[in-house]
Length: 269
Image (cartoon, rainbow, N blue to C red; front, top):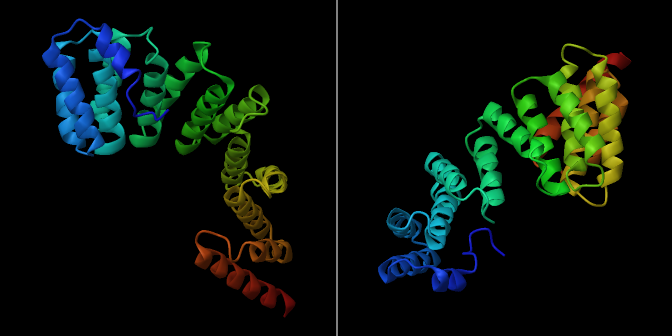
């Protein structure tokens, strides 16, 4: 089921006791949404929320308004208010876990409020709810938020804990990739971190070679960059050549290859 589709719309409308005009506004909102008139749909959803705030159809309208603001109108602050209001009014409903996930999405992906994202995801993990894939994603985003805030050692600890606590989940390759990147970034001040990053990049490239081409290419690039930093120029050149035609920004690889080739020539003189 689409995350934007109404949940069991007909049973909800049949069961609720709101005035027929409210139901009519809800149906009008859905028609406008289907026609991609998202702003008009939100206005109708808001009317339903105002007229029948705690009814099943009112809560459904609140959900629909918030998701539409987030995903189609870019009104992230208003969407956040909508999800938080939904959690206040219907914290035990089937919509609550989905609203909690969207709150995290807004903090992490939409607004880049990484400290708020950390606090939110820590609460979700502590709640004991959600399945293993969601929990792995929450742990990853906590680590990623620390990484983006330049708390590299903290990020490394979170990523390593996530790998230990959530093995076998779909997030494992992404967690490993960001763990390698955190060690790589730490290498700028502690060169002893480079071998750890290199080992993880190389292990990951072998693991995802046939399953995730983009991550394979990025892992090869990371390994090559470290080898270049360590002055292992021939090995770095070989790795960059592997992805010369596949890297998303091919000119970046070409520049690296040229620079390494020039350094090797100087060494031979």
